[in-house]
Length: 139
Image 1 (spheres, rainbow, N blue to C red):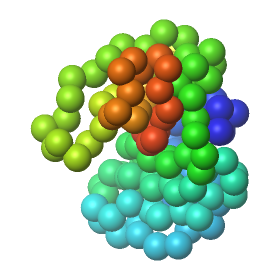
Image 2: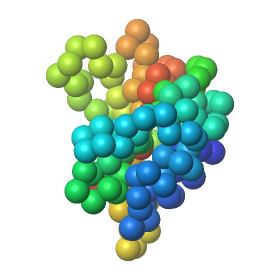
Image 3: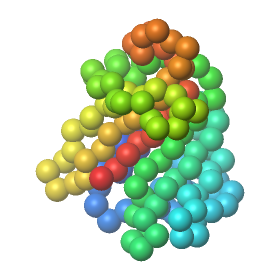
């Protein structure tokens, strides 16, 4: 899954993207794509269980890609690939797990990209936890 996140981070930093094209690159579109409805994608990469590609309804550009790991994904792997993270405040929804953010260096003329990793709420320390959801967020 790390290679997919690295590739996706580089791709989402580019200008002029189309969310449908991104969804097709990630697997088979199973639905969505209407205004305010993310693309639901059956992942080609078997390290991922589920993918949603959220898009701007006016421009068609992707705003975020949500990935659910197919198996345990240790936070240590994300840290090794993307460096140090920042802990984020808890979401207002108590059902949402805690999150950390990895900032990705953007190209000079591209978009900023962050990787938000939600981790097991039972974990005492995010550094030793397993990631349960990853959002690649594009400004």
